[in-house]
Figure 1 (cartoon, rainbow, N blue to C red):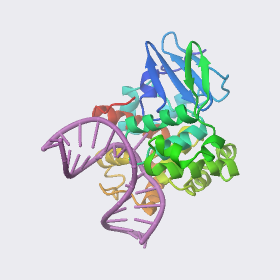
Figure 2: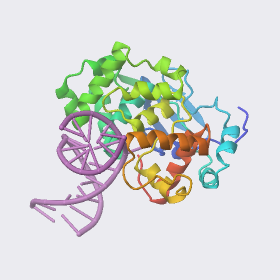
Figure 3: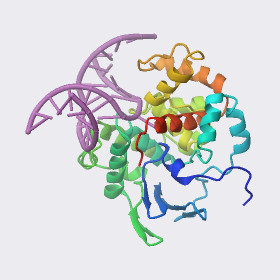
Length: 283
DNA sequence: TCATCACCTGGAGA
DNA sequence: ATCTCCAGGTGAT
């Protein structure tokens, strides 16, 4: 493998808020990506997949050099890139990503992780790989047919009904990830937002982390703080108050204009930077 | 169109 | 001990 840029930093990438179902055991990271189990080693660097995953988890097909150069036009982003050059965007299993971020609403990282682990335990398939045995993420069919009681037992709370409906939408073909991957950003966002439990922020996360939409720029509490703190002069209508539906769209188009077509990468570096600055815990 | 408010759950701080 | 508040938001009114 030709080394053209800074190597991937697994720890930083896993702990950047994109994924939840990961654990560090000894020196390696074990994770669940849909029906696939992954084992990552930092040095020597290796990625082992239980099912020969053809989708590239670390997006090696991206022209990283070009992207980092492009987003580094902005000085704050440039600093964030310099601080965590090994951070990468991840290409996740779309269904898992979709359910994960529906579960993320008004919750904390630890709590989200716990909900998703419960779902795997109750509805996933046990699989052995490299001496480990763990449950994969549930299939859409399983969650679509799950009883509310079982979902509630997974501590999903008010999200239980959204998860079931979302899984049913996949089963009925209302949501088709393969087509969404090919569709443009706007179409993808609109399709996702038809599902209850998915608003702008969650839709952007799903689009960015699993559907190859690099122009997605999820605006959550943290991103909003970042915009307020460092970019007030560029985005003057940002306040502490929640971003309303209409404002979100307007703000996003301004963001795209300012940060460029790889805004999703910018967001990831900025998000990581600010979370670390506030010493927030991850997985 | 916009502002409030409730919402499961668990952990932190008063 | 008990209460309050908040956590990577969203839907209903």
